[in-house]
Length: 266
Image (tube, rainbow, N blue to C red; front, side, top):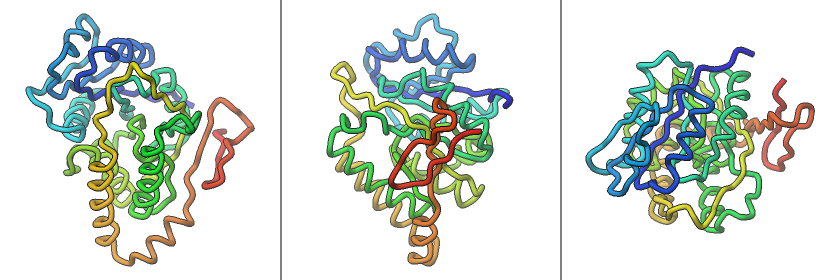
């Protein structure tokens, strides 16, 4: 398969402890790394000094959705096939970039999510529950079953990136709405690559507030389900359209799951 030309997009807010190592790692896999500093008040920008990146700076925090949109606009100016996003706090490992891109190269018109399935028992229980419920609701709106729909490490094909710059919601709702809009307007499917859960004491406290942001995402997604028309029909479609969970490291050995169909990359 022809390797994908990927830009790596990293939105960040007050990530001075982790951001340089993450960006240096991303540069090992892509010559086009875009960092959007969303109004950091610490030494995040100084930590990036001297690195060959596209740096976008916001004077004040505008939310993750706004930061991603700014990065997508910059990416569309580059000669790329799509964008791989990852968070700037260290929860996503740059070593998974080629694994995700390998799967994406074999699945045109797919969003490929780095799903936190390896060592999931280490995930804080409240996040685990919130993610499961979010997967159920967002799947209903998207029209296929999903796993770890809240993961910020994912591949977006160029056509989805073009669509995403016009998606309106802010904050963490933005990433859910990209999945919904891409499925409805471009018939984009979603696949997942298992990645390791990375929660450690050195990471700063997450900007994601489980109760507040979960309620925002849930209420927004419910509205998107209702606007689609038949609530019962769309639920049936979603529950009967499984996600592809693909482990590119185990040729001939599909990743087992009790909630979705596994498909091995040829």
